[in-house]
Amino acid sequence: MFTKYIQEGDRQRAVAKIYSQNEHTIKSSQIDRDALWAIRKLQAEGFEAYIVGGAIRDLLLGRAPKDFDIATSASPRQVQKIFWNARIIGRRFRIVHLYFNHDKIIEVTTFRSDEENFEEGNNNIYGTIEQDSKRRDFSINSLYYNPRNYQLVDFNNALEDFRKKRIRSLIPLSYSFTEDPVRMIRAIKYHVTTGFDYERDVKKALKKNRGELEMVSTSRMTEEVNKILSSGCACEIFNELKKFKMLAYIIPSYSIYIDFPEVEKALKELDEYVRSSKKEGLPLEKSQMYFFLFRSLITLPFADSLNLDEKKKEVFRQLKIFLSPMTPPNYELERTASLILQAMGYKAKVQKKAVAASSARKKPGATLGRRSAAAEELSKSKRKKGGRGRNIVKEEVTIENAKSLAESHDV
Image (cartoon, rainbow, N blue to C red; front, side):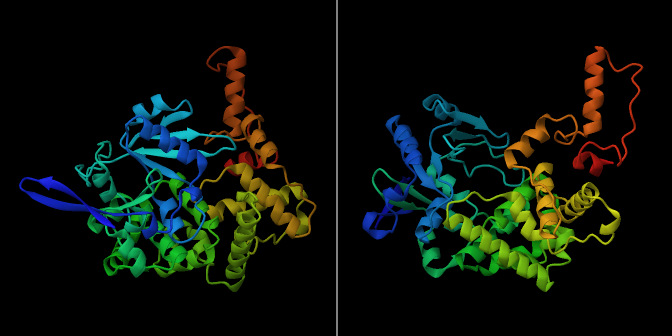
């Protein structure tokens, strides 16, 4: 290990510890080939480029990373010029996605500056690798690995936190959890998945700022819950969220039942399904995960008076309530409803995922985003008449004539 210094006036300041190949457990053979290719191309153009974040954390813990993210000194436009498969995304802070076969995406992020104002949330200032390391949420996510020279660069004594098994925030906690409340969920997730303990100030901030979760958008909350469900540790994570009284802010209706033995059993079965699917290399179906999550809570008290289609609509309605304010695709919930009915002993047909997704996009009776099926039909009528919809008689949509579960739910 050696220390990197920078000159400041007539003094030198230590900025990073650099570990060679024989001082850490990461090998380049463990890095995704496409990520290695991307780093080599960036470095060949004269830019700095490193594997960062969760991939390095997982490798140090002896686990196979799900994603390999890259941090570089190249700007998004410069990255886009180098790669034919690049697409710039984002508004608040622009990043680049590199697209590969089999729906694989590698995220490339330009080093961020620490000169911004946390309270104003201006994140579009690019900086140096040292500044970027200070912008990471927790120290265990702030290591940089260069596969070209096999060096691991540590600006924040992160390896010491690995040895002491602790979760330490790098951003001042007076800003961190209010700037991005999702970091609280991630802190709890890291605690469960790594077995590391919270630093005392992190624990206090989790209790103090849990109400900030109300400010998180439904799309981001949906994404975080799906990550928890696919972690293989959902039961422990949900119990930890309950312990810090956060679950009620995330999925309020579901949180009421978290102490029921049937619910805990279902969560453990979900974790077993996820772990076995990952072990066998099988894709994780969201509809299947929702099935494990909610099947013990769905009831049909008047089942005898309902036909199969009405039963499916009722299960769909209950799923919407339990998942609120999450916004998963309707076709996933329709598949979940069919799976639950099958488990109840009814002959419900489960659509294949590709067919269901295509149906949701193309069929007249499907919901497109937040637009109801009825609104889509009216829009089509207007286009046929070539005008603004004058003299159009709009058929009243009722539960009986609804053309999809989504439209029925809208009614």
